[in-house]
Image 1: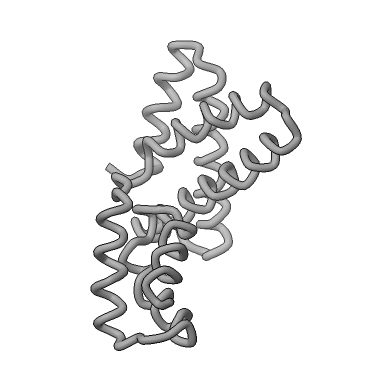
Image 2: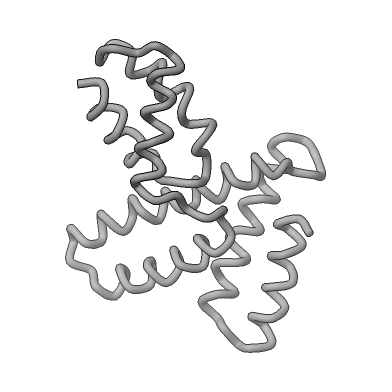
Length: 148
């Protein structure tokens, strides 16, 4: 079952259960997928593209969450956290920090990186391995830590 099919099924269930917030998030995810398909000029989106789109939506929420917390908007923070839980349910299982650290170490050895100057090379090699499985900021932190 494709992600779009899963979203359609979940949308029907949310309508039946009258879960307005969940329905709203599912519709937004569906729209994001359909907009990307239109942009690419295709009917089917690859699973990799689906993960990319979901990761982008999750990142937007993380960024907004930080801003809302700074502005002391508890009402919006709570709403966004609920949305993030729903988006997270469609993403692949997230890796722990230990797993991310190990993948970063192995990748640094693979590319032969030895200094901060190799940061871009390491990030370019490691991000495809971790796409959708962790936040890019976590990867960034470990790459900087191991290269310094």
